[in-house]
Image: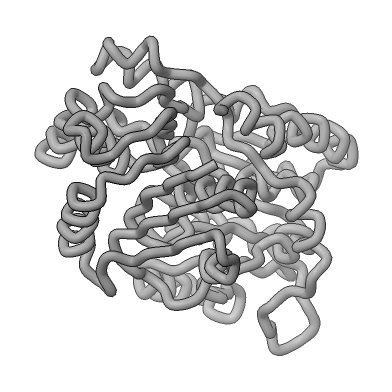
Length: 358
């Protein structure tokens, strides 16, 4: 098979992790992975490029706008054909659709995936930009994956013609790969032996709710004084989170290891895993945490989370609710969750997921 993936950059947010999982699934096929620009120098995408049948191309070193222009020019000039094209971003899906509409790009099957609930998350000019792609390029999709019923309902309400193209499929997970990665050691030096800790992970942006988590942790320290907090990730709000920790006299109790390629040892050894997001399409990190730990707290930041048995759920954007949820989960015997989580995740394995796409 000849396969194309178009991705804005080589970072590893939820949308990129989804496409990376699919890329690994198809790594023995002829695979073109196109990025508009390079965001980081070395991450799991780089290892795929070692295969002779995998072609990774960055159309710009650092500018998305320049990368989009060069990608368009390349596609219209070469007029390539593929068996399958995968995207997971409104702009990339829309652009592929426009190229397919014009005849500059041909494919037997075009599979897009929504990465977030656009109509709940954005307003104004940015929303109108997305609407342009929904009403043009999206018409050339063969299949549009929505992660939750709520995401699908929002799309159908605002763009009714998409209903016939939509299939609701929850995020996949690669159980075999996770099992191998979880056996590695934690890649961060705490300076002492590994402490008792709570862990969370994601980009340092407002939607992830890490400020809520830090404030909730401040309250929790009064009940659990030996606990530390580890937040994995990078992003523009890191400095403000460090200031918030300092204001609450917690600089020695909160760790910011930065971007971590292998999160699973952290999730495995943590006393508690937490998703503190305010809004998500569906948090991939929640499934990753469930694969390693039977103590998981999540805000109701996406549709479907309330239906996962064993997770301690709390309302979004509430310091008090998150504090109470974390304390309850820490004080509860959750051994039964291992079986509940394993049964749930087995149905989400990447091999079963791909049979529903192709």
